[in-house]
Length: 119
Image (cartoon, rainbow, N blue to C red; front, side, top):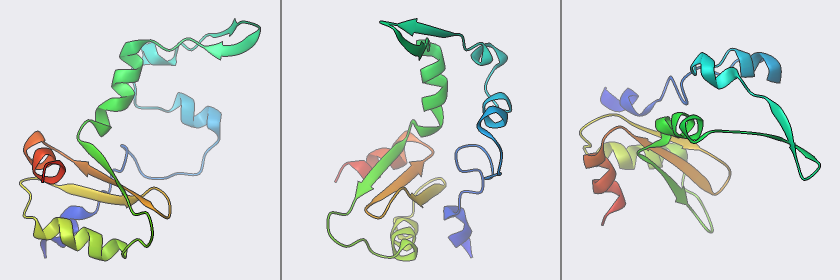
């Protein structure tokens, strides 16, 4: 059935692999210019200088993303996914858990985004 449209096999661009922080940092799919991190110090504290284009590149997969909040009791993830499937959105949709009361809804286009976000 079309229910598999809601499963995001490439959630945040890749399957989960067990690796060290150094390996994860250097095996990133971002451009090589983003790997040029130079530690500096700001007011005596170690810091990194991150440019705006790097931030925009990291935020690009979440351009049409929404965060849902359930203050008391969250329904099951299957029922939430079924709800979004029944909306008959134009393109794919991914619904994943962030923690016990928040969900991440990743949409692909602005039409679906406005349909879900605006009542």
